[in-house]
Amino acid sequence: MIELQGIKKSFAIGDQRVHAIVELDLTISKGDFLAIMGTSGSGKSTLLNILGCLDTPTSGQYLIEGDDVTSLSDDELSELRGKKIGFIFQSYNLLPQFTVLENIKLPLLYQENVDPEASHEKALKLAKLVGLAERLEHRPYELSGGQQQRVAIARSLINDPLILLADEPTGNLDTQTENEILNLFEELNSQGITIIVVTHEPEVGDRAQRVVTMRDGVIISETSTKEHE
Ligand SMILES: Nc1ncnc2c1ncn2[C@@H]1O[C@H](COP(=O)(O)OP(=O)(O)OP(=O)(O)O)[C@@H](O)[C@H]1O
Ligand SMILES: [Mg+2]
Image 1 (spheres, rainbow, N blue to C red):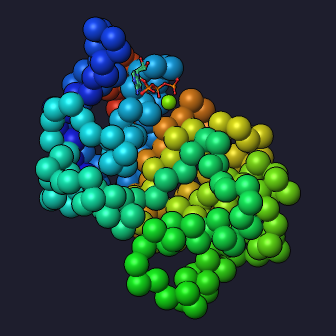
Image 2 (cartoon, rainbow, N blue to C red):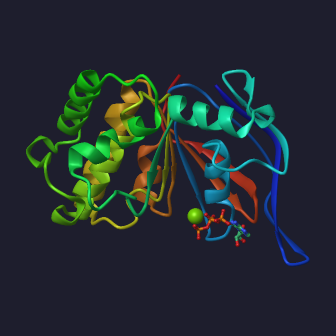
């Protein structure tokens, strides 16, 4: 479903170039649960941003379901992002003045032809799925970190993404809450959503089917920890 070939990414800083991704090939199948691990600065977030079409590689080929992403315009990229990709960040990125329900519906604000009734029903269903049915009218500051991350997860699902990308989603959470979030990821994965998680935490890697380890902008190892098709 996802194919990266010969991907390189460098950033210009003054007259220097930082090679965040030196050279990388990666194939991800539908329904994979992949963890990306590695030391700080090894290029994990850079890779995730490329996978999520938030950034484009300096060179190389990126295919999603056979479509060459690198040839798309900015508008086409944001359309692809909106339709196929859900994002979850370490810092939740919720809007403080909005309620739980409004935050979950947020991605729909940028879309045309949204049926308000259907989207309301959908947001309710997702709030229930992540265990926040009793918190619909709360604002983010009235919620715990784990609850805020659940809102972010529900928000990432509002457009039925094929792929869920998460950058250190449990980095700010205690072990029990981390476990609950990981259970939720496993459940979503069993429903067929492809999940790609960047993490420093071995517990997260243990839940994934594949673990890719990066160092200095390359993949240095890959292990399959669980049997899957
Ligand atoms: N926008 C940018 N401009 C310049 N350099 C960048 C930029 N983004 C990343 N880099 C550099 O690319 C390298 C890889 O960064 P990246 O954020 O991908 O690392 P990471 O593996 O996610 O690290 P961490 O675990 O600390 O989050 C680093 O050396 C970083 O300084
Ligand atoms: Mg990072």
